[in-house]
Image 1 (cartoon, rainbow, N blue to C red):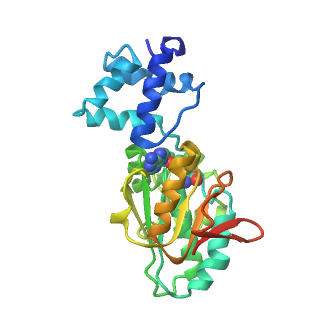
Image 2: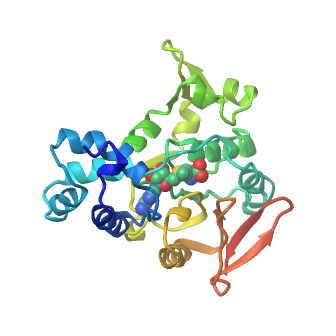
Length: 273
Ligand SMILES: C[S@@+](CC[C@H](N)C(=O)[O-])C[C@H]1O[C@@H](n2cnc3c(N)ncnc32)[C@H](O)[C@@H]1O
């Protein structure tokens, strides 16, 4: 069965990775057969599908949207943590928020995973505003993976997830302990964040305009061409002078006509021209 890497033929693997890139941009390198086998093995067994190429034929025919969603969910990598890399949140607090003053901001977390990124942004806003501002900031958090969007909306985290990047004082100030031992984000932090399904290869027109975009640790899965396309379309939904944060290993190149690089010591943010 497909739970084992040996059961994936070179043809099956090629057909599947072409399909995956077409539907969600995620590129698989030549040697990720083990990943496909471990992530899709159970689904294929349950559906009684013996070959990867048969799965692609079935999905390409249409009418199997729940199965397609399940396959995409399984193939996403949702690794994240609170205040990941620290710099973007420090730059938001010490540069961008003082610059914008009392203006209400619209911020997009463009691959929000289980919610740690948008909620870290919301905590940063809360600390800057200190509860006294009239600004009605909004964070739009989007992702393609429907399982993790549901988890993010729930805003509940077990002790392992809580331990990754959160200080004791933040845990105390912004989370309530639940009877089951998990921790839930307080309503004032939660209410600023709206979660939505969005595939980054699709249009952003329905999202409106933003002052800041966080697009971190997702472009690494895409081709150079798709990265360029996404960052060009993000420029169109950034207000003039708006800011863009990328992940630590993601650099922007070939777009100097659209973005200025701002060195922040430490960290980098891109500003829309
Ligand atoms: C590694 S996580 C990064 C989470 C967060 N931005 C961070 O830096 O910690 C990557 C996220 O990108 C999402 N993703 C992958 N392909 C996507 C696509 N085509 N459209 C939208 N989200 C996508 C995955 O579901 C996953 O939650």
